[in-house]
Image (cartoon, rainbow, N blue to C red; front, side):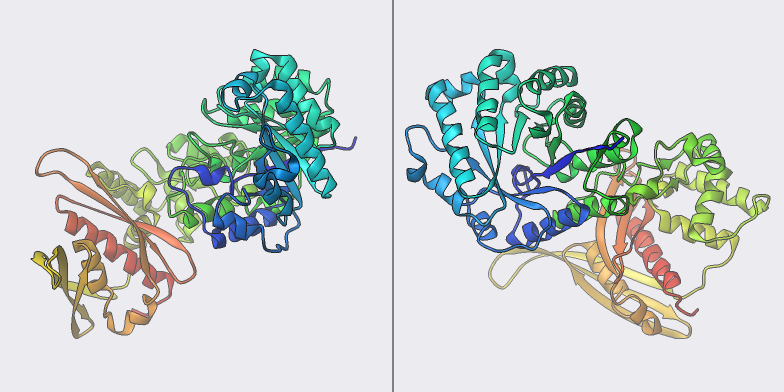
Length: 531
């Protein structure tokens, strides 16, 4: 039996841009559009032509995309004709494959927000769809506040949607704009709508204000809707939009949907989902959500020893899908709650061969537990764990030793009379029989120490030339003036590979030094530097 086609509509570049703290440049929008196109998304909504210079420029250029590139904007304003509305004119002139109009479908909003009549609002929808169709554009109508409107006045909400469909709109999209609808409500209301408008012309646009945007989107599909709108990583105003990064693998991998429907994302493209999710976060300069379904670093991470033991026998015991299908990977975390199974699985993953009966495995496990008892966190610092394992199970070359380091913070007035704090670090390093002294000045003591430490490592300098610190996290583990501090440092090499190291000490500089040292030594081992 042939499967029905579901269409994916991404609005990251428009609705996602309304996220607090998100501000896309033209370059960002073009790069994200290309990434979405590469995933196999059917529609990419670029923005609102005429609303700002970035979107105006975006829609003035030609784009080589397989996806239907869509412009967004309002239907004609009440009291204006389609030929005398600047906003509508900008939409019609934009270089876009489709136009998505937004219109009020809640009678309360028509009266209060638009301050017009119900009939005039219907005429506005009708005229706008006609004008776009006359320009040869595919037309969509976002029925704003549809579910609230339907609950208040089902006849009028449905009239708005049906007016667009009758005039030739390809898609009529039912929007839960306030994000307050529940799955059973969405399923029931969409079920009523598809009695009047064919389901293969009906879409769902859900917001996440009750943490149910994904569930509401799937409920709409069950009821007959055949287009899903959402954003990458659930970006969007307030609590965000339906997260396509969760919806896509659910449609692809869960039999209830996979056996009934097909989408434009192939099995091969699905493997790029984790990369796409994390690339977007990188562009926005924010840390990925470790606990995100399917793509988060913890999505397939297991901490408990008995769980890890079962996973080693059969991953299906604790995994609902194979992590590789979405480009993620399994992690059996090394922690004080884990057992030998976790240790052995992690050693196998990083390429260290060990016999399960080797007594050193027990020593390594005991060392991990004793260190985590005083604050180390190896589940979050895989590189530091690997170095610890190599030291106990084999050897880590003595590439160099730090004989001494000194860090100072000076508060002074600069040349233009401003009060500034300047950090300076001096490091004495011994490599073989040679002693090297380096100094670094940074915007903080840790930055200064990092720069001084990596300034001159003699024969090893070429191996760390492209090494950079990309994240620095501090946690105070207990209160008081003698608090123990844990520092996690994320580093990146020239190939974009990242790793995390950990240091623990009552002194934040010493904890940072431990993590910095582990990062450098790990890079030297990874690069095959000679001892």
